[in-house]
Length: 163
Image (spheres, rainbow, N blue to C red):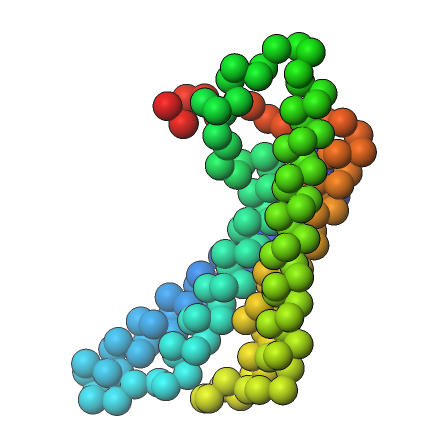
């Protein structure tokens, strides 16, 4: 594993752990206050929702970089002949790139809409909710484009997990 990917994986793992820790603490504190003292922290739900969205997209980006996204290898097994592999690899990376484009376009539209509105309690711009989808698809799209241009074969080592 090369140095930049290793640093990205480490940073992503730490960011997800921080999101999870803050979410767990906020929810735990809210439960204790609600059941123990009859009042809770209203910002807990908004904060947890925001951190959960960020955590999911950070994890999705890190999983793509490691080749750990779900693979439908049972569907690809008949096409795994040597002659089809370069075409199949380019097709898969092109489809990932196309999907990233669609998701990024929709996320961008939501970011623009969210710039003018704010959350009810914490008052953060609601553009922060779709922003990780935009950033994640941009990062995955760059990785897929690099794989497409290099002709790198996707990892088909998921057979045991799929069947």
